[in-house]
Image (cartoon, rainbow, N blue to C red; front, side):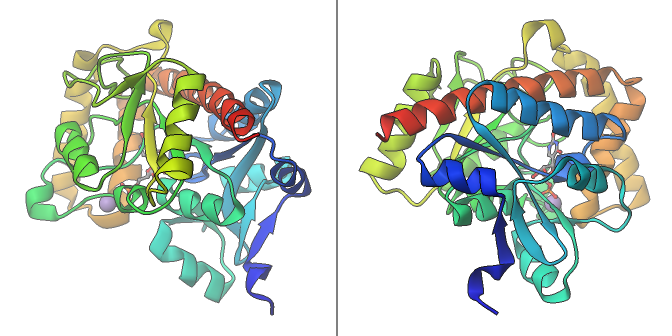
Length: 308
Ligand code: PSU
Ligand code: MN
């Protein structure tokens, strides 16, 4: 077995990378564990279309049958959205998936690692993981942060969901040396809401400036880090922070009562929020993922152009 047989890049993605054209990575935990069916598969197909229309090649990433896959077919997206037994995989789960031939939906961390192996530098998701509320006793800090501290991929998100401690997550990202910029706002966004009560660590406006930052990070300074790019949810889809706060507090209390810990925490909180807001949060979630995909595609196109 050659060492690279565990990495399979879709021919269209391969061709784009070889030609120095824009590629945008997309994650799969959001499909298998972040949203209900059928909205999950509809979302997965639509974000690929949005990326394509803006001149970049979409590459959804997952592990299927023990191989890291970069770029999936519609059938494979459907399988991730519906199949039982697709494990949620962060970076440390990748060796187990490869060794056992299993399939896994990749988190932000695992998606970044596989994207970097394939040479994809720009990645769109919904929200990144971070420091959980109460982490001083649970030690629950997402491996997304560790990955951002070592892997050269830019992650476009709508900020951080307030199921997490946003202030502590930003502190941790600073300690880890991860550049954090907000596109077009002085406020750091909190997923459903355009603000979080915290200032943007740094602000940049538009894809050209952000692509320059990526080249400064990797090409000029050769920093071995990821970059976190937050873009606020579109105004017409925003849910004011106060309206989800109560639902999130209830979900956190239920988490405690039920003693849910570890990898189950984030999927549990995500599904509770959708249930308790009567689907309103799902509509907002879909709007921000579409927006993040478009922002990432424009950045990827600029990044490729500035490399010429
Ligand atoms: N936050 C969201 N939506 C998501 C996730 C986080 O608002 O779908 C998913 C992402 O895949 C992220 C993962 O990488 O949850 C983080 O999981 P954990 O907290 O177990 O590291
Ligand atoms: Mn965790």
